[in-house]
Length: 195
Image (cartoon, rainbow, N blue to C red):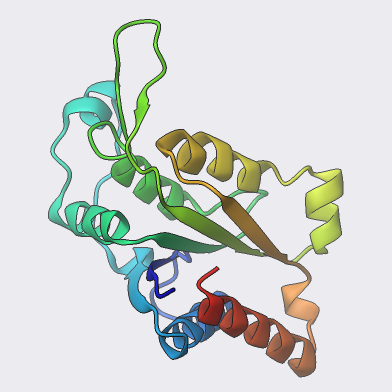
């Protein structure tokens, strides 16, 4: 069944192309070949300020770039979020973007005191794709995939997005061309299936 997919490229470098960009390209190609509708957001090209207070987060007016991102996310059945692991976490620009986008009134709604917030993005699924210099098993098993689990649990599932799956790609700098091609093929196949 065709899906609407929004790909969020979280690499903060807007000047150069990285392996994560190639992965996003292949996922998008696969999605289109599979009959899905695909939109893309490049966080590095968006202009938005940092949120600095609770008041801004809860009551501030999102800038136009964030409103457009929210529309692309609301439109989608499935989100794909790609980012490189920096200092054991997502890059600060992506975190700032998520804080702007996943705010009250869009991602969730406060309820009466003592009740959990209402999830406003139910019915959507997501895939997180993380690239890194270290081996993937070190990140998953020794470092317990902290940033990945935080994004999944504290942002996506908190907003009602489920299921959330992940693809962790380690040792990126040391990959052979054949290994890179294998990962690109995998992302294209995931795009074709809309997963």
